[in-house]
Image 1: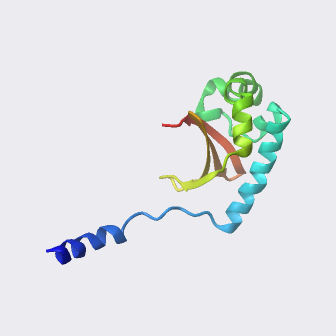
Image 2: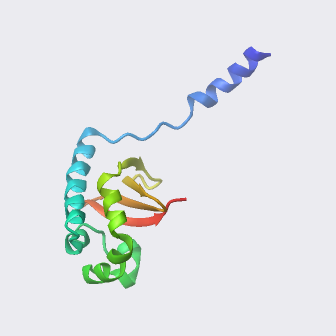
Length: 130
């Protein structure tokens, strides 16, 4: 009976989803991007961060340009605590359902998302860490 159970379980284990792994080229590209992003955070340069952000931010028409991002999003999302967290936090790679390459930095109750776009990597979202 144990053998039958193990034989029936084997296909399920073999089909377990594999953890996504970034290619070395993609990792190198992200490493270059995140180094610049972290440098901007280190100097609290909201203009540089806005320049590395996909706008309109999170498809919100109220945050459609850099000035709006700097006024509405930067002060609340990039507090001193969050800037420090992003600078020391490990970025975790994954690919979403639309086959986009994403990196995530988890900071307390927030997740900062960086996505590979045709223009290169950009900061694309901040969400709840549930």
